[in-house]
Length: 473
Image 1 (cartoon, one colour):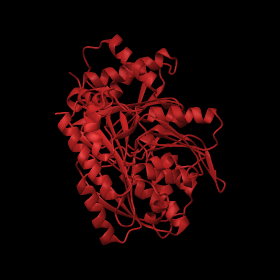
Image 2 (tube, one colour; image 1 turned 180 degrees about the vertical axis):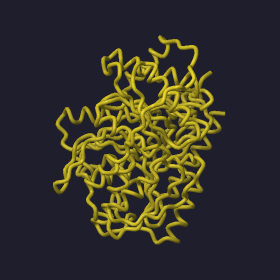
Image 3 (cartoon, rainbow, N blue to C red; image 1 turned 135 degrees about the vertical axis):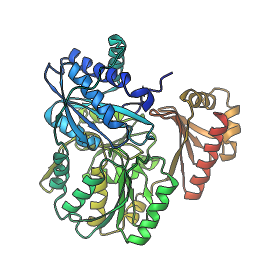
């Protein structure tokens, strides 16, 4: 059975099940959907970009062949951040395909589709799958098309240099954990242009699956060591395709993605935030960040929430996910400098906004973060857990018969509330929360917890990862 499926952001699965006919057929199906909707005409361009994982060049070439065979013109934008490709497509009013598996291991990859002027929606995913079945292709031709080459990263770089201003980060020294992120060089370029001194760290020639929602122990250890050795104001990084940020303070302690997103919203003066149910409960505290709309996990849901917010009259709308990707839902103007909306996940905007707050407040990032009084929130994952096992566990915990639920959580004061918006989020009698959900991108069970102290949150996460592991064997 194939592992390919649309998740929270694009189609993903094992490389062994994606390369060849599946890639070609899904790209052809995407083009067929566009043709059916009159979104493209014969001869229109489709931009194609990729991340740095080992399978991406071949998959990108097979996408180009599919685009050409569909009567459209493939344009090879090379290796670049997903938001840079999205920006290029949106500015030109054309469609795009990004070859990326984001943070998942190198033996997996994926396709992310953009139709002018936006990411595809859930309804588009259904249409692509319908066309995939309708086309019923049974062979993939050899790659023979020579796609037009086009540089597409300059506009992305200039977007932030023009908005933030050339001296806004003057005097800051920023470590840049480069690993295998496709955005590792553009981050350094922009930091230099804004007056900061970037210190490249940890560059790798092999793909490293850095997950902003479930950091590896070695990443946390490296950040703390770099902070001690380098006297840095912050350490920044991204996931593989540079649409989700990693930001660590001057001590090398990473800020959770929802906190990075909230600080970005504050810097931009947002009057409305759109974020999934997995983001910190502190966001709902009256008077802290204005109005908050909660959604399911996944950028399509956040984008839909931002569209509703604008329709209802919100002035500046910022969306973000608990894993950090920030989506700008409306145009912003600060000090006569403007930033156009970019309703797709982006890592560079939150990185720069958080650094600008450090400079503006003349305070360490750790102090700025502490002022928000976020609950201590931790998350991690169990890998190689089929989705059906996760769903079975959630069903047992949510069943009318409470014996299983109370046996599991009685020592925490029992379960006082349940939120079924996405997976199952349990509020416990002692004021803590535990949230179980199936990953949309891989066979993984995600566990999120909140508590008032780090030690309490750490223990709660460890205990419930163990509980989930035992119940899904």
